[in-house]
Image (cartoon, rainbow, N blue to C red; front, side, top):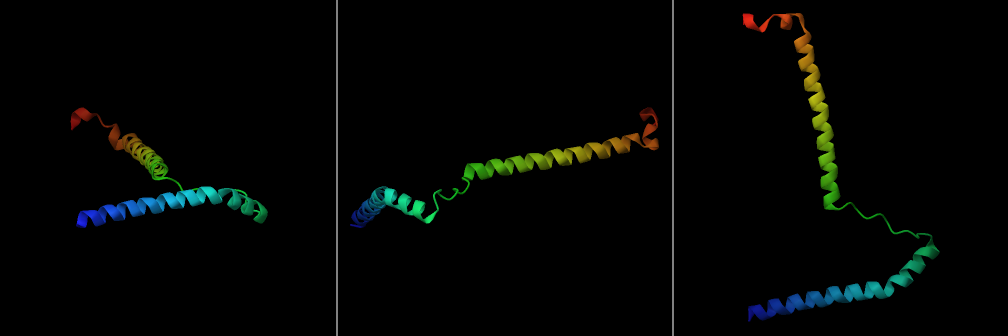
Length: 92
């Protein structure tokens, strides 16, 4: 019996989703006209998708890694250019 209620709930939610899509499609021309009359012709910018957020995060990580690599290389060059580093390595 529980399976029947689950099925009914599923189909009811699907019917609700389709009704919402149908209404939004039917009302869209009127909503566009109202937006034009009010002065809000353009739709608001959609929020970034998860993929775009991940791409932005990867770009930030890449920049941070490049900056850290430059710092490490600069420190290594400074260490190697010191006078005590000029000693031959064979004496160690």
